[in-house]
Amino acid sequence: MNPSELRSTLALAGIFGLRMLGLFLLLPVFSIHARGLPGGEHALWVGLTLGIFNIIQACFYIPLGRLSDRIGRKPVVLWGLSLFVAGALICAAQDDLLWIAIGRGVMGAGAVSAAISAWVADLTREQVRTRAMALVGGSIALSFALSLVIAAPIYRLISLSGIFIVLAILGVAAMMVTYFVLPSNKPEVNAQASLKEVFLRPELMRLNLGVFVLHATQVAMFLVVPRLLVQAGLPLASHWEIYLPVVLLSFFLMAPILIFGEKKQKMRTILLLAIILLLLAEILFTKTSSVISIAIALLIYFVGFNLLEALQPSLVSRFAKESKGTALGVYNTTQSIGLFSGAALGGYLMDSHGDLSVFVMGAALLVCWLIIAWSMSEMPAKAVDSKDQATKI
Image (cartoon, helix red, strand yellow):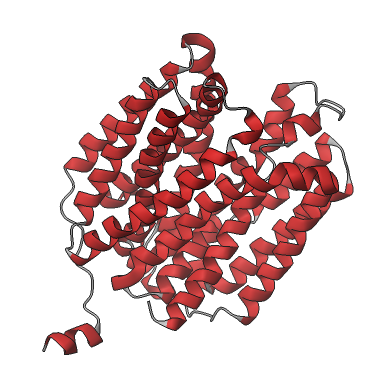
C-alpha cells in the first residue's frame, strides 16, 4: 500500500476496532457487575442488555450502508460515531440495567461497519484491497484479545461507568480522525443498484451465507472454549494468556498465505483452505483435553478466521462495485444474525446435548459452506495498476 492508502486504512481499522471494543470490553465483567443491579439476578435480562447492541446494529446496517452510497461515507460515519458517544454517556450516567440497555441500543444504532468497509474499498486499489481488509478485520480479533486482557483491571480501577466514559472519549477521538484525517468521497448516485439486485446476486449470496456460518460458529464455539480451558486446569483469569498469543501468532501465519493468494490470483483456493482450517479446528476441539491441544486448535481456527475476515469483505466490494455500501450493509446484517443465531443455537445444544455438540454443529455447518463454496468459479481478476503495467512493459 502507498502511504495514503496505509494511513486511511489504519485510521478506518482503528475506528472499526473501537466499535468492536465497545462490544467486547463488557463481556468479561458485565455479568458480574449486573448481579448488584435491579433485575441483574435474571440471566435473560443481562443477556438482552448485552445482545441489544447487535440486534439494533442488524436493523441499521443496510439503511446506513445504502445511505453512505448516496451521500458519502464521512457524514454517515460521523453520525454513527456520535450515536456511539451518546450511548456510552447514557450508560455511564445511570448504573441501572434498563438505562444501560437503552444506552447500548443507542450505541448499536450507529451501525457504521458497512460504511467503513466500503470506505476502505473506496480508498484502496484492488491490488492491495484484501490486505487493507485484513487490517480492518484484524482489528476485530485484536479488540477481542485486548478486551480479555484489560477489561478486569480497568473495571477494578474505574468501575463500569468509567469504562463507558473511556469509550465515549475514544469515540470523540475517532470523530476527530474521521473529520480531519480521512478524505471525503463523492458517491456515484446514478450507478447505484437496487437493494433487491444486490441481495439476490449469486456471488454475494454465497458470501453472505459464508459470513453467517463464520460468526454463528464463532460465537457458539466461545460458549464452550472457556469451559474447556477451565476443565484443563487454566483458571478464567488466565485465559488471556492463551487468547492473546494465539491471535497475534495467527496474523503472522495468515499474512504469507494471503499475499500468495493475491499474487497468484488464487483467492478461491485460499477461501476454501480457510474453511477447511475452521473445520479442522472444530474437529480438534472434540478431542482436546489439555491446554496445549486447545491452544493449537485455537491457532488453526484463528488463521482460518482471519483469512476469511480479510477475504470476504474484499470480495463483496469487488462483486458490488456500484453499490459497495449497500452490499456490505447486507453482509454485516447477515453477520449480526449469525452472531445471534450462533449464541441461541449454541446455548440450546449445550443444555440439551452437552458441550461437545456445539462443535459437531459447527463442523456440520462448515461442511455445508464448503460444499457451496466449492462450486464457485475463480474470483474476478483485479484491475491492473498503471505502475505495475508500465513495469511489465
